[in-house]
Image (cartoon, rainbow, N blue to C red; front, side, top):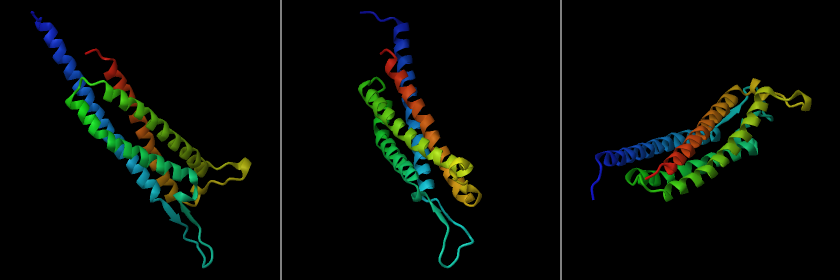
Length: 183
């Protein structure tokens, strides 16, 4: 049986594309891991005490004062743990670039983690918005005028989490592309 030189070239080219997609998948997972873990750490270590405290009254803001921020931290930690556990499977996809079952599994779990991360980041974004702008109709005052450092840190933490959301979207699209490619 004869094989055409062009067919062999296409096959090795397709393997190269799949390997490149797998390497990009691994790098994006590392980026998402760093951003979600940093977001969780920054939020979990955020607190500020106002300087005009008295002996009996202290004005202190901590992330766990609001259950939404606690959910944000837990969601980012769960997603970071998943990303850490998915790295070996991503390495397996680099070694064996023709596997589809592991990619399908990653797409399913990536989608679930994207939903969890988006929920946590969106809920926290609503609270951060209220902290910055307040709501005069409900007499919720903007606390960022007093707790400036606290607000800067929670806003930075949100940015890292939304970077993770964007990377997850790219991961899902990349995996869908790799699955759709013919062998």
